[in-house]
Each structure stands twice: as structure tokens, then as C-alpha cells.
Image 1 (tube, rainbow, N blue to C red):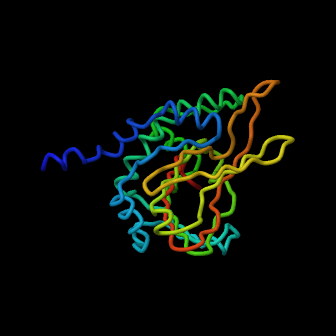
Image 2: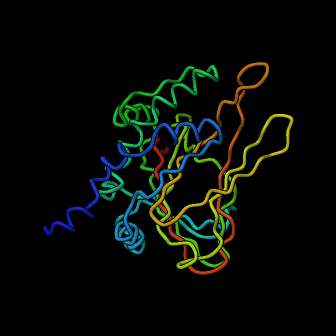
Image 3: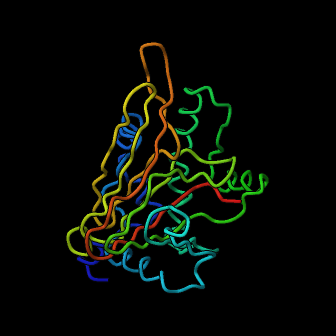
Length: 245
């Protein structure tokens, strides 16, 4: 391999996770319920994942959002085996987030604790009857959007998930901003628009986060969605760490 190519070559996906600024991401999760990774996947990796969408053999089910009142657009849940890059990212990200999840649950007085490895946590999911893989690929066209929601899929869930933008804003699509809304007790809801570029990921709270108040720690609920795509096509992939019923 030429010297320049060696310099430009990215490490394997799991190693890239280790190289992220986890102190900053954890601080952003604590403060806002969402943390940004910065560049994570290459343009070619993004195109490769988005290009899987027409291959029905890679997926276990396809959801048309408008049929269920979820919004407008569609998505597909991957079947096993997962694409190689997602199969590498999922356990690497989980391992970094499990200590944060346990700290949050302790702060909120929730008894559930999460094992250090994804394999062990998925074993608990399967014992609970949640055996279907949840990583997914989403496709939006002009006019499409995703209503505010939470991805729970069963009684057992991991408190964080990750979304990776596979298309380039301003080139492939316009609009379509990833959005979080925080519902605070006895206060008006707080929106958070999350800026992402192609290949960047957001890690965010699935259901709630702890907040330190004057009378102790309390929980605020979060839901996420996507604003209306104004033009073009927008692809994202989502990594959910619990399996579904």
C-alpha cells in the first residue's frame, strides 16, 4: 500500500469507537441527553450501507410509517447476520455506554444493571422473549418525517441508542433534522435539533435521563424524531442495543 494510503486509512470500526472523546460524549449525554461522535464512517461506508436498502434478503421486515401513524417514509430491520460494520460497532459502543447506563439507573433508583458486554445483555433479552434484531436502515424522501417516539420494543431495554447519518445534508437532501424533545415535570417541553453530517453519529437517551434538581435527582422523559425532508433522499442507520419481541 502506498505511504499516503496508509496515512489516510481508517482503523477498524471498533478501534474508531475507542478513539472517540468519551469524556465529552458522556458530559453531553448528562447535560442534554445526546452526544455527538464527530466523523465515524467514511463516505464509501455510508454509501455501502445505504445501498443495501433494495436487497430484501438483508432484512427481516419493512415498515411503511404512514400505515402505522409513525410519520411518512419507511425503514427496514436488518436480519442476522448484520452488516459487518454494524456488527463491529454495536458491541464496541455498548461496552462504552454500559457504565453510563448503570450510573444513570443508580441515580434514578432503578434496580436494573447492565452487563459489561453486549453478548451478555442480549442473552437477557432473549430470556425475556426479545429475540429479534433491532438495528435498522431508514429511508426518507421529500415530504417524509418521523413522529416523536421511543424505541423500547419490550420490557427490557438499554437506555441509549445511536443513529448514523448516511447522506450529506445540502447535497443529498435538505431539511430532515434529527430532533429530540425533553418533557420536563411541571415545565414546558424543550426541543433539541441535532446537527449531523454524513458519517457522523448521535448517541442519545432512549426514554429518560436523570437531572439534578434542588430537591434531588429526578427524571425527564425524551422522545426523538426527524423533521420534514424538504428535498432529496435521506438515509440513516440506527443501532439499538436491545432486541425486540
